[in-house]
Length: 214
Image (cartoon, rainbow, N blue to C red; front, side, top):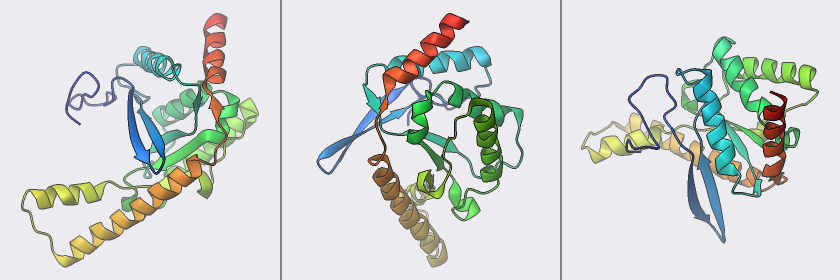
C-alpha cells in the first residue's frame, strides 16, 4: 500500500505495518475481517516490540473472539537464529493456551521452495517442541493448519500493466502459481471456519496478569 501513518516501507528492518488495521471482505453471506498487525523483531529494539504488542492487544480488545491467528513465515530460514527464536517465543508467550487451536502457519514467497515449508519447517518444529516441553502446551503444526502462498502473480499483472511482455513459459509459470495460491487461500478460509472461537478476553487477561507480576 501507500506510505502513511499505518505503513512505512523505506526503513530497513522496521515493521512495515506500524498500526493495526482491519479490512472486511464479503465472502458469500458472511464477512471476513482480516486484521493486519505490526510484526515482531523490529530493529528499533525490544521497547518497540513491546509497543507493537500493546498496539495489537488494544486493537483486538474491541472484538469478542478471533477465528484464526495467522503467523506469516518465509520458507527458507536455514538456521535457528536468535531473532527467529525470539519472534516465535514472544508471540506464543502473549497468547493464551486456548489460542493454540486457532494458530495457523502461512508461508509466503513459497514458490521458491516449490510450495513446501522448506528449511523453516525443521527449525519451527524444534521451537514448538521446546515450547511444549517448557510450557506443556502443544501447538499444532500439521498440513491441516499450514498454508503456502506466493504473490508473484501480482507482479505478473504489474508487468502486463506496464506493457512488459512475457513468453509462454513465463506466463504458464505465473498461471500455475496463481492457481495454487487461489486453491490454498480457499483451503485457508475453509480451515478458519472450522476453528473454535478464541475468546479475546482470555489472551487479554493473560497479558494483564503478566503486567501485574512485573
